[in-house]
Image (cartoon, rainbow, N blue to C red; front, side):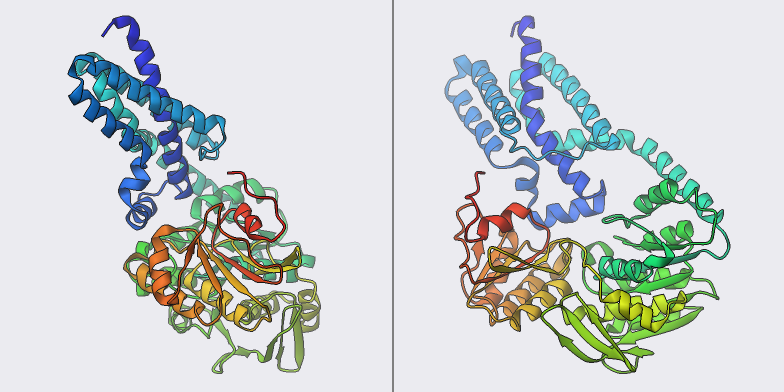
Amino acid sequence: MSIDLAPILVGLTVGASASPMLTFVRLWQLKEWRIDRLREHLRAEGILRQLFGMLRPAIVACAIVLGIALQATMPWVWTGALAGIACLSVLQIVLRRQPMPVWTMKAVLITATTLLCTTTVAGVLLLTLGEAWLLAVALLQPACVAVAWLLWRPVDAILKRNILRRAARVRAALPAQTVVIGITGSAGKTTTKELLAHVLAEKHPFTTPAHVNTEIGVAQWINRTLPSVTDSAIIIVEMGAYRMGEIALLCQVAQPTMGIVTSVGRQHIALFGSQERLCQAKGELIAALPKDGHAFLNGDNTLCESLRSRAQCAVTVVGTGGRADMEAFDIEETEDGIAFRIEKTHYAVPLHGTHNVTNVLLAIAAARACGMKTSDIAARLRSFVPPAHTFAVRKEQDTLILDDTHNSSPASVLAAIAWARNQPAEEKVLLFSGLIELGESQDRIHAEIGTAAAPVFDRVIVLSPHCRRMVEKGYGKKVELYDKTTPRIAPTALLICVGRMSPRAIQSLLPNSPAPTS
């Protein structure tokens, strides 16, 4: 190899590495840079496919075969394969088919460090072992990204610690009469948060934005939003967790005076290890409440109700099946939403799904504890607008769509199926993304969903090839794997969309939408 060719070969290596590097950075960012979530994703989706893809290893394999067969020209085989992979990366980026991370400061630093690592390794390998080893650099980009992540981890830990400490100081400086309402649960957190914020609108509550529920996300929001607060206020904080201790840490920062647990289900059970440990994690909110605080629990959920024993403060249990401090009666699903009665007061809420009754009850109970009158609460609930993509019903092109794509859990999927069962439609179609982080329960839960869908849906379409087999096993009929050739639904069909997915996937199934281009 000529020394003059070295910069070109290193440049080709960086180009060949660009696409797998960006893909892996985006994946890890979606998993919030967490090793546990990334590990579970790779376990569920397949390590080889997720880390290396299919096409690039095939090109390398062909190069190895040709290199062995054509030993005299072997260097040109390696260079040609490297150039081919580089062209593939560039083409994906130019055609905008390349998954890209959100360019936060952390993503920029890790990507830049990965590029530096890739360039350095490529140069060393080229000078010591030869051109053939450059292909390994392109294939092993996940390792380069991991090295970059490890290099920045100490700095990241220090920055996070400072963010949390500053947020704790901001919270501690708020007036003593400040009410902080923490909301957690396996499902229904966002809906309950938005219900409560809407009911308390005249009190001008501060509410965490959509998708902000981790300790760092909440701490950053506190640092941005609350330093200027000088009067007593109501603060509503959504709290999520992926492991034990995270809600406890969030409570150290936010110092909640009220706590709401919407449910304890099976979401993220792979990260906790068991449903009991997940229940304990949700209970960290209840245990953190002061003696003069107030806890609100969903009595229709057995594990949730069991958290009563962890409270040292007043507890209100809501429910629909008896044994509750606040109970809903005469529950019905109407064309506009749900309706029910508490004692002598009737409530009509433009929110679909009778499973949401307990979320509304929790919001009512917390609003009462904040001093709201029953009549005012009922009036406010009549004008509620559900959060986008959270069990939201809309019509497009005369097609009725249930959009529950904000997030998903086993309970929310089954709730969507139950809602669809009672809807009149000539054809019913389920578009399902599949569930993640369910551990050893994943296959069984997907089969359960297929079984529940069987008597309701004429078609079931899934976006994940890994859940298709088990959904099909429960469904008992063919389950379609979504792609751009998937047949559209009939004009009069009911379309149920559950789980995170691109809006384009929904649009491409509607009868009169333009054909997808990619």
